[in-house]
Image (cartoon, rainbow, N blue to C red):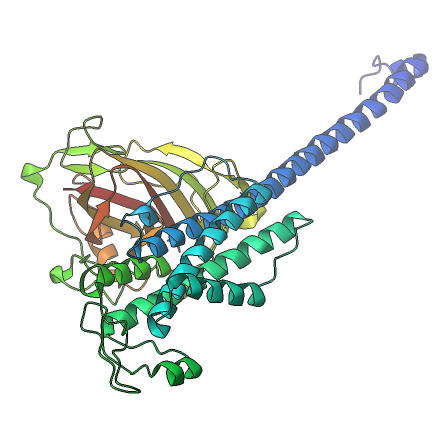
Length: 468
């Protein structure tokens, strides 16, 4: 220190009140700043929590809406299974809902559908009873209706949303039971199995155990020798077989279509021990395109990469072999694009629209041991079959119009990854990061596509390409 330097802090001693005032003003400002930051963070957490709670509520409503829609499809199947109603394909109609309906509104629809299903079921039972007992159908209807009233008292009006949801679930379960009973009846008809009357009716009428002749009439062999009304195969050889297939397709949506073949040798399916193998393509005749429209409004191409999706994730996933049986997260219960959820590590995840310019499709946020979901709608100008080429790192399932059409979880992917990452190839250039392909049927108009992508370590992608 030089001799002429002023003493340290001399200016503070000269003006103590000024500096004291500055300190007294600074301390509250700092406290207010930290308090404000905490309040902002707390408000943000509360806002996110409200979004998560709203997402859970909307997802639950979407699940209830799906139950009611399934009841509508059951009603359609039951109508088509009876000769009194014209055939149709309403059970295959795809439901699109931007905002799920409230449980109370859904319950009203469910009750009305349940009433109509009950009517169809009573009419079918009465028709069978009338044939078996040789009585007028009106009388048989009275007996069936009286028995139904005795067995099922009216349900109490729900007082809460939870009670309304519970009633919808009960009504859907009842509708499914009615469909299963009808399936057994159709199977009996197809196999020519006699549906017997009760013991009293048998003793009174002498109804025999006749076998059907394929037209619904069987000759009795017992009692007084009168001809018994056997429920033979009827039209089950044609429409009956088709109805059994339709019912099976509805009750087992995660089973592959028997008519759909995988790539491997033209036989078998990827659902049963297939080995992932990259199909070959003819690059010389390839006209590549991207988008969601297979129609005059889309890009002219014979090989279309579906690159526009709503994506959400990452959610918590499993490692190793558990990756192929990953957790079922809320988007699998119902797609609600306005919903938000807690994802992997507690982070808030929302649906995000992605128009991927570079092949293949990659989630914007990469995470290991994670699950992602994607949703889009494909537009077609005509009903048709298309070949679907699918590839993923690591594992993917794909649903078309709520029906599982691809599952690669049991495929040996080591050879696939070796081809993709360890060889010189043109798979990216050719839109061909595909582990296999299948022929699937698309409806005219809008078709829903939904995938689940499970990632283990390191890299991740999903590829869906369509060809004629």
